Length: 73
Image 1 (spheres, helix red, strand yellow):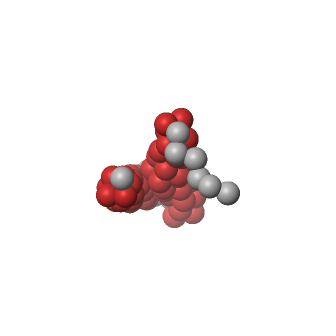
Image 2 (image 1 turned 90 degrees about the vertical axis):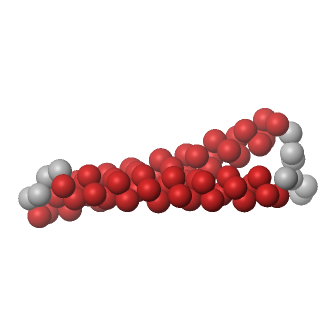
Image 3 (image 1 turned 45 degrees about the vertical axis):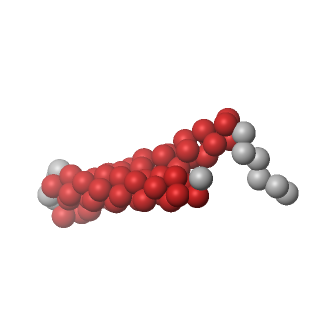
């Protein structure tokens, strides 16, 4: 099946990239950090560190994927 290229599909594709590439690493860092903090009794330090890693990795991935999309066009 051919891929559609209407503006609404491009917008939905961009929204999906933002949701999966930016939000999920941050939430993953939060929940893993919260679990690790409860286990080690160090709340909130591991949570903050893993959330920062999530933010950095999410922004890096989003920047690279958006640049790749621009090069394709």
